[in-house]
Image 1: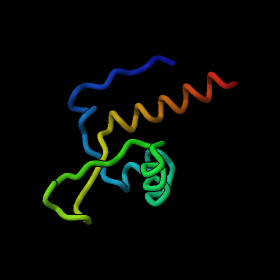
Image 2: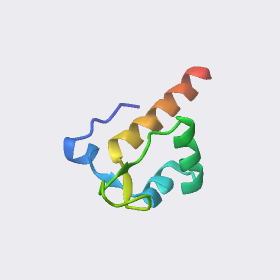
Image 3: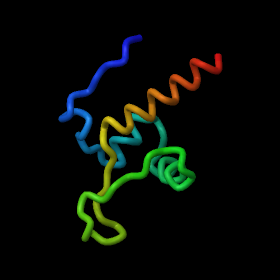
Image 4: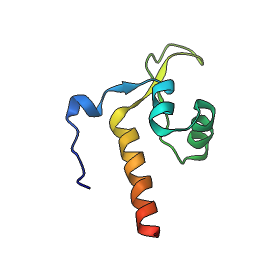
Length: 78
């Protein structure tokens, strides 16, 4: 399988937590736990002044990179 290259626009597309959860296949709560454990990339605030419950997200390219790394680790272990 060839590694597709993402354009800059695609890489920096912002995924909200629900979209990230659907893409990865984990719940939003589990993603939060993985972030705190340092296993999944941390989300960033869309508005730094939004307070503790402000909007946040992940870059599409970062999530794709995480999935590719997981697949590569699984394939190398087999």
